[in-house]
Image 1 (cartoon, helix red, strand yellow):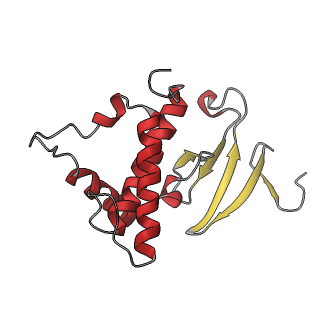
Image 2 (cartoon, one colour):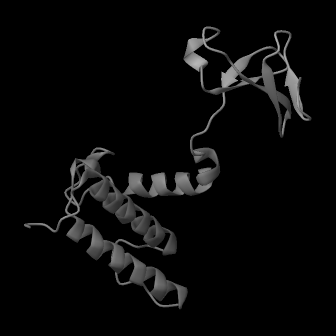
Amino acid sequence: MANQGERLDAEGVRMEVGTEVRGKVDFVKYRPGDRPEFYGERVERFSTGATRSVENLYDPYGFLNPRVLQTYCEYMERHRVQKDGKTRDSDNWQRGMPSSRAYRSLLRHTLDIWLMSRGYKPKSADCADITDALCAVIFNAMLLLKNWGDGNHHEEGK
């Protein structure tokens, strides 16, 4: 017998009912042997009859803003051209750079943001405006996150 808010299928298997913003979705937990690839996972069953595993991962769609990401990518694209005129690969930075370099740049660009927020000119020659300085902070923070994740957060030469 089903408890209040529950539903049983024709074979007496409990079905959990959920609601999605775009309409009602039934959640089904399959039994062993039914669909082994889904056993132990919740599955969305849509009104069309289609099914899909419920996503329990983090939500980049919600965490990221496409306009901000586009602005950052445009900043990075502008900075691919080096002073010698050669264009570096877009993933060049992922080959590795010392954290000590990233810390110095991060603090310099943070100071640029602070200066510009008070009406002063930035100290860094490569910051045309506050958007550039903010993108530079993002870049250096990502480099540091990568280094820490890779276990390469040590100072250069140590």
